[in-house]
Amino acid sequence: MDSLFVIKNGRIIDPANSKDEIGDVLVSGKTIKAVGRGLDAPGAKTLDAKGLWVAPGLIDLHAHFREPGQEYKETIETGARAAVAGGFTTVCVMPNTSPVVDSAEAVAMTIKKGKSLKLAKVLPIGAVTAGQKGLSLSSLREMAAAGACAFSEDGKSVADSSLMKKALQVCAELNLPMMSHCEDALLAGRGVINQGEAALRLSLEGISNDSEEAIVARDLVLAASTGCHVHICHISTKTSAALLREAKARGVRASGEATPHHLFLCDEDILENDGKWKMNPPLRARQDMLALRQALACGDIDAVATDHAPHSKEEKSRGFQSAFGIIGLETALALCLSELEMSPMDLIDRLSAKPAKILGIKAGALTPGYPADITVIDPEALWTVDPSKFQTLGRSTPFEGRTLKGVAKFTIIDGRVVRSHGD
Image (cartoon, rainbow, N blue to C red; front, side):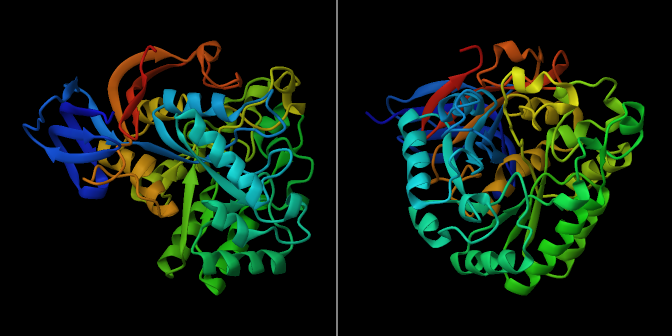
C-alpha cells in the first residue's frame, strides 16, 4: 500500500527551488506530492518536524563499499546502512573492488544488490580501464547502458594521457562525468603523509602537493579539449582548488569535491604514528585546509563527499604503514554542521543539490513529482563520535571522541522512513 504522510512545520531548506521557509511536505507513495503550508490529505499520517530542517536527501558522490571481494571491510548492505544513518539517501560507489567493476555484469550486480536492500540508493561508478590496469579502456558504453552513473579509476590516476583522452571522449558522448582521482604516482613515490613538518617530525616519507596538482591540471586541460565533464575527487590543496576555479572561468565543464577530513583537519593535527591519520590524499598544510573551506563556501568547490574508505582493524593497526583510508558516512553531516561557517542553504546545496546536478539525476530537490528522498535534520543535537556504535564495518576515524552537533533525525527514501535516529 502506498505511504501517505505529511512532514509538518519543518524548516524547508531546498536550494534547487530557492526555498528556506517553515512549511510542510506531503508525500504520497514514492513521490513528493506537494510543498507548502497547511498541507493535509485524507488518511495521511503526520511526522512532526518542528525545530528540524527538512532537506532533499543527501547525496554522496564518493564512497567505497568493498563488495565484491572485500566484504570483511564493508558490504553493500553495511555501507548502505551507514549511509542512511548519516542522512544519505544516494551513494555513488567506486569500482576498485575485487574484481574491479569494469563490466556491465558487475554494474548490474551492484544495482540489483542495492535495490534489494531498500536502503540508500547505490549508484555504481564504472572503472575507466580494464581491471584498473591502465592498459586499455573498459566497456564504458556497455556499463553506461547497464546503469553506471559515472566513471573513475579511483585509487589511482590513468597515467597514459592518450588513453585518458580517449576515455573522456567516450564519456562526453555518453554525457556522463569522469570522476578523477588526481595523483601522479611517480611524484607521490612511497609517501605516506603530507610532505611537511609532520613528516619530518615523524621521520616519514612525504607526498608533495604537486603530485595531485599535476594531474588536476592535465585532466582539466583534457576536459577542455574533449568537452567531457570532469569532476575532481577529494581536492586537498589550495592550488588544485585554484586550478578548478580558473578552468570553470574559461567555460570548462568541471566540478570538484572536498572531504570533511580535508576541510577540518591538517597535518598539524597529526601527533603520533597512528593509522587513523593515513589517508589519500594526505592531510595537507593548514593553509590548504583553510583555502578548501573558502573554495567550498564560494562555490569554487561544488560538493562535500565522504571518500568513505573502510578497512579492517588489523589493516589500520600498523601506523603509517596501514592501508590508506578512513570512514566518513556517519560523521560527514555533523562535521559540516559543527565546523563550517556556511548558511543552511549553501550547506544543503553542497550536500544534495549540487551532487544531483553533477550526476544529472532527478534528486536533490523537494519538487512535486520528484522521488520522496528526504533527510530531516536536527541541527542542534549533540553527540560524541563512537565508531563502535556505527553501522559501517570500518572503525578508523581521527574524529573518534569528538563531540559534534547535528544528526539525521529521519532518512526517507522513496517515501519510506528507512532510518530514524536511535533505531
